[in-house]
Length: 442
Image (cartoon, rainbow, N blue to C red; front, side, top):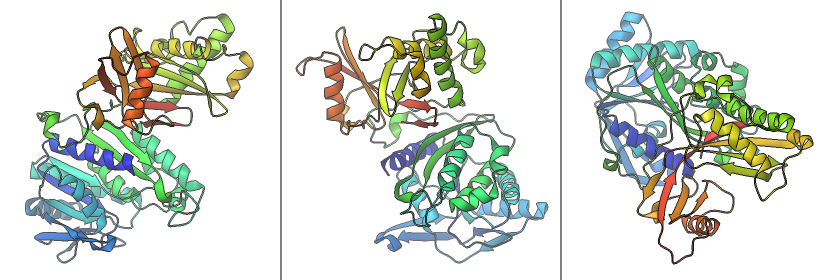
């Protein structure tokens, strides 16, 4: 669960840096009514992890009474039923996010559980919640708590269903592209097959963001234990931007403060561009003449890019640029795709008959950041560039067989011809990987 753990730390740092003053947590594990959202209205709400063998870990949430009163008023005006419950303890759908958040800051807020009504009603309640938050007038963090599918593997807690993976893959991709209408219109039978518990929480959050321009980012996704865990950030950008605190104020253990770039890019466009460039080169011996015209969204963006080709699961070519060498991201991809297919010295040039057997991935790199303490990096999340004079060696993150930062450093130095005793500078970066099977942060 390391990806989830790191992403939750990252998310809570963002909440602190955004200056959040109050909090709303929507849980799937609280008291659920068939026709009403339940809001915990006690003065101080308490919970612990006794059910998980750690009863000494206790948490408390101070209820934001003004926000509670505003929510009551907005719900009454809209004629929407809300159940206010004085008694009750915080369940793990609240205490887990609180545990991570309280490592950064402690703020009052509300804990609530969705109803069993259709998605349209959850979304409607989210709009009401938005109005209450606006009336309250404080910077507010809204956390949609819950898991995705519970049926990813035969060992999963809710049994196995092949539709579970499709549900997770579809929902994560729709969130990356922020296609709210498509999320609300997802096939209910597919949702049911997934055995999920967090979909309604998420729909309330989306309702809370209605009418806003949103900067979205999926920070992580993984499926250990047959359960899908996703961590994502949705930040309104059409309102006054609060001043950001310096990132060093967060107690993240990372030596590299690079954040993954927020992208609304479509993976099929990037990998499709790389594939078309390979095909064009096979036909007339040159990359696409003007790929930026095919993908207008890439005209203004510039970034280092690696293009990787695999054949039957084995590497067939990989070439890239650490810093952008072309006018825009589209041409960077097109040029590096050709180099991966025809100029990687480890492999013979790609043949026309192989193209159908090749799978393509495109890694878009964040800006490089110099690292003082390399021991604090994690090779699963951060790539590494080592520079010594004119020599340099680079490793992308999350490579098979590279499990420690020491091994990552050794291999990077070896690739660059840098001796163990040489002085060097180390730089870290993050990667957004687009594959023909989907895309992910690594």
